[in-house]
Image (cartoon, rainbow, N blue to C red; front, side, top):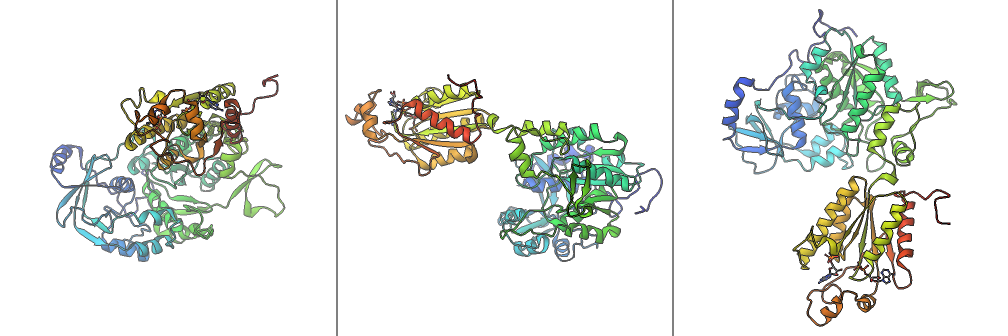
Length: 581
Ligand code: ADP
Ligand code: ADP
């Protein structure tokens, strides 16, 4: 594709001819901020903050505001703004019924931390139909689509009007990579062909190969442009991803032929329409080519297990509008590795019986990272493998919480003490949060009312969740009599790293042991609200482990828990020669 302009400036103009800039000049900002502080204000969602940033910097040019009724209508129907320019995705500012705004008045827009971002002069307030929008934009109303589900939480009214941006969202991380469209264009000045690569995943060898081939194909420069705003729930976090991109850009690409920049876009996972949007945005950053592979911006499968979009629908969509948008589509099929020839090839170009190798995203996590196995070099660069293994350590270095529950004197602390020693023997670090001990510091002053007991358990749960999140083993031993509260704690820690252990000792046995003399006191009425006597205990319905303490010793029980942890991968079996004997 030939681009229209000439000279040494960036060859391709922004879409619509001019880069939108909504940021109030520095000289006027203080005055405007003062004025804005007296306006009524609304807090906008994280998604709207991302949209606002891209509107403000011109990434959505020629769009210069959250869409009004006419723009919105035409975008749904024809993927165009009322000006006729292509624009496939609605960018709106939804508000709840009863939000204090009125026509022809200004309103301050603030983020969730209440920081002032912009002033919007309200020119339109209109109702929108979420079913219609879902159907038009996403081609579905299936709630498995993450955006369709999210849209059910958006307000029913959209607000639009002129925007004056007083402060762009602040990003403290990777500052040198956060190029605005104007800055990216400057960096790309003099490069006739710029090939953008959109990604929300760590990059492996096939991606490296694909981006290099695409750039070579048009003798172009690569704009490696990962999304760091909002991506698909469950994606690898952007801190980890960006470290992998940096490592690759620094070591494996020709430095004169690559620009790495971060895009604070809130993705919609809209497949073909989203791909077209990606092309438009990249044109504004100075690219005139976009790589579109299989399943671009795919939300996965719907509730009947079928993909929402065909694997190459996005390619078709971008190709169809390429000339008008000024962004050529570089198609790619799925690349695979040919071990015998030590090279990569598109699946479609191979004979049916070719021997290939590939590792899926799920396999990367489960079969390699969690298992502590190194990812092979044909699959990913060693620097990338190292970064991923830091974020996803093997199971035996991940955190886990063992939550003991049962009556006073059931044997929770005693069992936890033995388990501590066994875990130390197996190379794990352990913190014990014992109910009695916690009540002397963290929960000092709390009593045994339902409220106080819940506060106590939630505090232990909070600390346990933090320890587990940082890779530690935490053993909590508190009566924790209420089922609902225990379930809250399970959710705080995360169910996949929570092991509930019911120490099922009958009350007669606990009372018979009564080594603290508390049951006797409770019977005499000197102690009120004692669990099991005159206060409830709700046994767990589905604990991971149930222990009985009349026939099994504390050590036998502790070993039973250890075996469970080893089976789940949270501890490793001791090697031969290290065990007893
Ligand atoms: P909890 O922490 O559940 O209140 P403790 O572990 O502090 O209970 O007390 C349990 C008491 O029962 C200890 O004195 C312990 O020696 C005794 N005990 C007897 N048999 C067992 C057993 N199999 N498991 C745990 N504790 C036992
Ligand atoms: P929780 O806060 O879940 O009820 P804790 O383990 O924090 O349980 O505190 C219970 C411990 O405090 C018991 O092991 C017992 O030794 C002591 N205790 C004192 N009074 C009571 C009571 N009224 N009910 C239960 N345990 C009590």
